[in-house]
Length: 216
Ligand SMILES: Cc1cc2nc3c(=O)[nH]c(=O)nc-3n(C[C@H](O)[C@H](O)[C@H](O)COP(=O)(O)OP(=O)(O)OC[C@H]3O[C@@H](n4cnc5c(N)ncnc54)[C@H](O)[C@@H]3O)c2cc1C
Image 1 (spheres, rainbow, N blue to C red):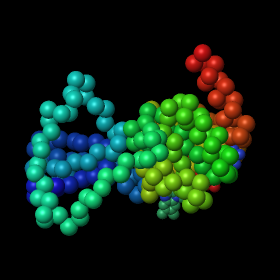
Image 2: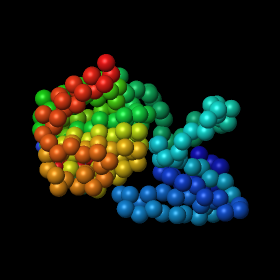
Image 3: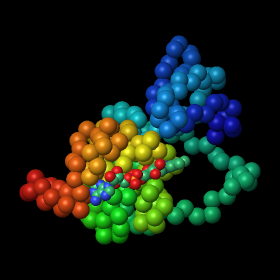
Image 4: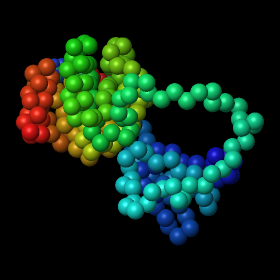
């Protein structure tokens, strides 16, 4: 689209700064270690924002600002043959207000199912670290991180996830982070707002019970 309009394109934007007519954008780089501030050298910009980085303005539905452009279908090199939605019916990670994620600490299918039950009860999106995807225990579309999805929910719950920089790159934008890990030195605790040092196989059932009580 930017090429068609002959304007700049910037993705993964977390902030926009206007200096008179000059647009500047801010975007994370190098797995969230630094923030780039980039001057846009065209008067208009096609901007792709990072999920959850901006609050929607109240009272704006969005529909009134949509401009429909006719796509020159015949010129496209790629052709959309079919749009397949997530057949699992699970809550989309990018839209979820709560994301519950599972890591290698869950060990096996039994551990995955245990944490998934908590996610279902909270009506949360269910994600995972790459270790669980590599182990074949979770599908790739559930991977959170640098090479997975970037999420910014109100609450992110990490079970048995160490907190590798590549995982953090995908969830550090969460408003509140809860980590459960049996290793008190796990790096995830440096980022977490709340931490429970313990075995997730013991902690998850207790959490489920407590949540049930609170919800009456
Ligand atoms: C180029 C590149 C891209 C990558 N992209 C991603 C990415 O997008 N997303 C991603 O997640 N990773 C990514 N990785 C992999 C990343 O470096 C880590 O290897 C991965 O995140 C580790 O997953 P983990 O935390 O589940 O496993 P581990 O690092 O093995 O951690 C498991 C944790 O579980 C804890 N634990 C063990 N048993 C229990 C228990 N019973 N109860 C509670 N805690 C327990 C342990 O103390 C440990 O902290 C990438 C790596 C590379 C090189």
